[in-house]
Image 1 (cartoon, rainbow, N blue to C red):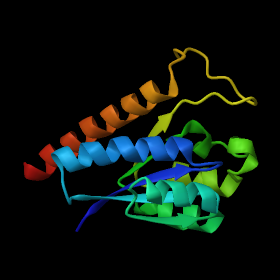
Image 2: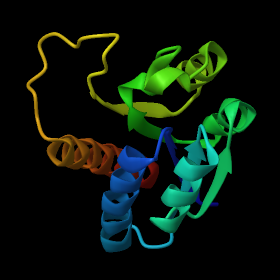
Image 3: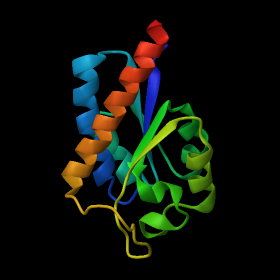
Length: 150
């Protein structure tokens, strides 16, 4: 049975698209065929772009996020996916709660937004933050893989 990585994004899906591109490179190089990427968009544009970027399947909307985020062994996206009313209001309280309550290990990209400030984080270009998130994902998948073989 394939393990799953869930990507949650909204607006235009740009962060999700970048994450999926880098994750596909990692998976194709180190674990071909072992992992599935599921794109969960708050809107159809975000979902469509993430699926075109290489997600194996996708779903759209509040209920899709609430139900399907629990499928992920890992959950990635901008930090706003755990904050109600983030991403220009696209993240509802129940969506944020579902992401926080899901069983998967969350790896969040610390994108600043107008309505909150992340103190103590070094301002990095988005591409560097995405690379770091995928590096963390790779380390955690390796740890899980070693644990399963033991």
